[in-house]
Length: 171
Image (cartoon, rainbow, N blue to C red; front, side, top):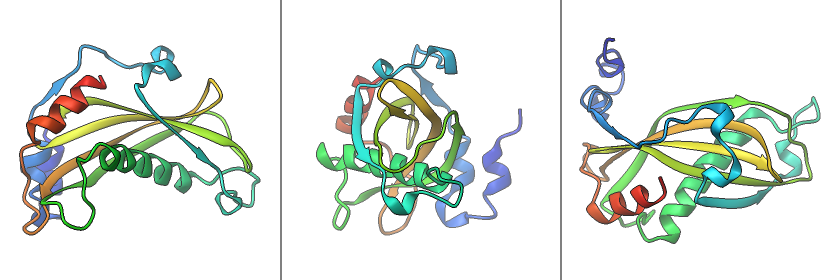
């Protein structure tokens, strides 16, 4: 299978996408299939609340809100555990991929639990499996890939050992 990074490198050369997306990743022992994933699959869960503005004209949360919830939860996890400093840290994570399968609608007002599972940890990138739950029912399932780069030059950096250990413990 050809490397997707080789096709994207010309679009974002400042991110060195070709080298990052072509880097082999270590895969956890778990292979996650939709039927295998439950709320208990996630060791990090954050509860969020829907907002009136999340609803669209169809009366349910618009898909863009899910991506915001997922990104917010991953970054909150990293900030809470002192792995991300938004203004002064040398290392930042840039989202280079996201996808989401919408399984059931969510509407305002509801509490939503967002689960984060780092399922592939590479040299400079992490693929997170993320899910939105209302009570125990999975409403959406997605994946986000962060590439960790130097804040100044935007070149990929090796994930620090402490962060790697933390993420590995969540697998």
